[in-house]
Length: 325
Length: 212
Image 1 (cartoon, rainbow over the protein chains, first blue to last red):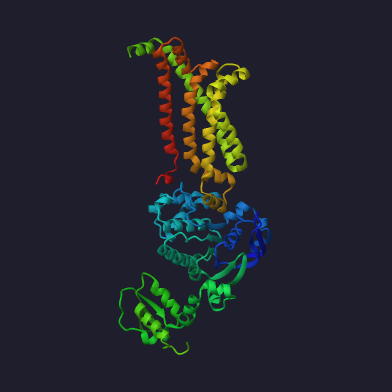
Image 2 (image 1 turned 90 degrees about the vertical axis):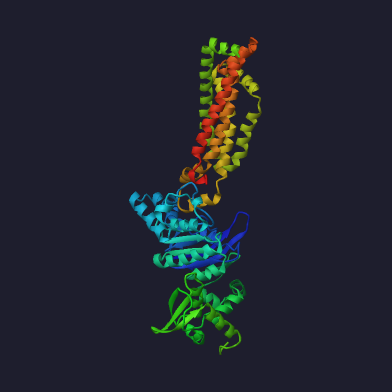
């Protein structure tokens, strides 16, 4: 657990980046710090690995103040993925990933095994990529390397500073999905900074909304959508997104029964339980490798659902076909 | 032309010795110049408020006409190769110093922060990140200094330090154009050969991943 205790940050020119921030970042969860640019979110994150120092207040990891820890040792125990590139252009992919293990003085064989394991984890075939240089890779591949480099030293905490912001939308979505899947395997405490609400809602277990150096709200994505603490959070999440989530996405798939089809169109079928939310169905169908969902109610097949049946349901809803709207 | 070849033959001993002296002067001056300005460049890149004054001083040295600088040094140092070396070192400083500084300061700050954030010490950041990335700049500075030094070393003859300037000077005094040429051509040749060799080194020094 990472705890911020009344943290204030004032820069030399007098601007206050953070004002009396007290928050807790839970262990083993993906926490997103979000806010408009200049709200202090990156400063907040950099305090965890001591790249920024609080003017007053304290930052504690597992109830121990980071002031009492050796800076270099602290940083080696925390993974760090920075915005845009951040890979060392003069080192091969293998060397980049092996950096923290090398700093920690791991034996060569252990390091090499770790590097290969990590590269496989994000689908970069080690034999092909290990001796390439960062600039020979695409932006998405580079940032995959950036992510696994942060994991190489087996840190408990990983900091990510807008890691996907420079990528094209398709790679970004892919990497977000991969990060989610990866997190399910590795269960690290991830602190992820972004200004992109779609990204935040997609990947976060826990969210911290910042504005002008103050915490506006903390909570799960669901809590933020359903109970925005104030007008700012509501605005920031976006009215349209709240409506979509509330009135449609929150319904159970079974409520769309009239729109199920009995013959499937498309090849790639995914089985989904009828008790899932419609939002889940929307997310599944947005993925490139899913054409149609097979809906099961208590192990019994009830019908198929695809984009067009969803669309019909949406249109019907707008015409008031659903009772309690 | 035949005059020139004849001169080369009859004065071969003089030319050979002058040639070796010339190489000796240039090499030692460059080596010491690198030993001074490389660490100095690293220092001023770290403590940047000193950068302007330090570079400024070396730039002022550079503006002193080379003949005048040799002249100033004689009353202070007497004549001999030490005086010549000091003058040559002074001229070698600026290009190496400025390029080291520029090279180090132009390394992307986010890359440095990535290194620090991952737990590298300052020295590790310098050795493993900043220096390799600045090396092409530094090599370019050394190349400039080399060509400069080889050229200016011809003036060493005026402080009795020998070098190919001796040959040229003797030629001038005796109105012997062939002898002037026999001194000047090797200087030009030396400068070109050194430049080519260092160009090759510079290419080798460019980190592989940066050539893409």
